[in-house]
Image 1 (cartoon, rainbow, N blue to C red):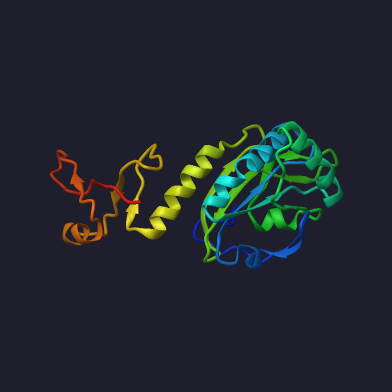
Image 2 (cartoon, rainbow, N blue to C red):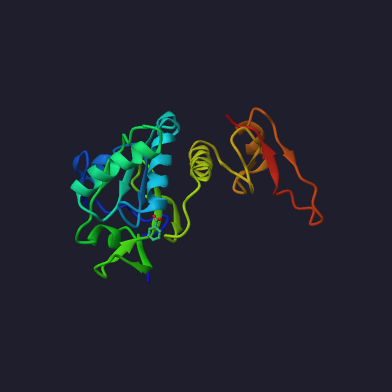
Length: 220
Ligand code: BEZ
């Protein structure tokens, strides 16, 4: 089934959240924004994930990133659940908004429906979807996990660091890259351009093909 994916524009949906009603484009404004969904309130993995998001919120703020959680239950339920999330996570405050979606229209439009899960009344529920939206309101990266698998927030931060660097420089990040490590120069950049573009210089891997496409450099 087709659905919202990388490169698509974020629909400008209106969402009722624990911080008031928002329109998605106004909320994103000119920031990177992470929109992440959860199968349901008062469920075990979700409680750990929302708490982890709260614990990492300073890391997202340092990167200029806004957060928006989404779970279909209503706002009263979210407000009660937040007390559990904060208590379980040593009092760390949930400072980001959590949206409600009682009609399930939002999760459908954001491609966040879990095909294999239903709530006790038989209604559809969200998967553990996470979209990183750019300041241009386009989906830059999506994670799609089933209800049984909690997400790794270090991987979210790592992917975000890669995306933000690739927005700034003509680079990409290699397998298992971490902040501070070498990046690779985009194939569209010639060696002559690379010499001007990357003051740190670059080194080219010698490969059996003798093609000089794997070039490493350092950027800030
Ligand atoms: C959970 O958050 O733990 C969960 C929610 C729905 C199905 C399975 C697990």
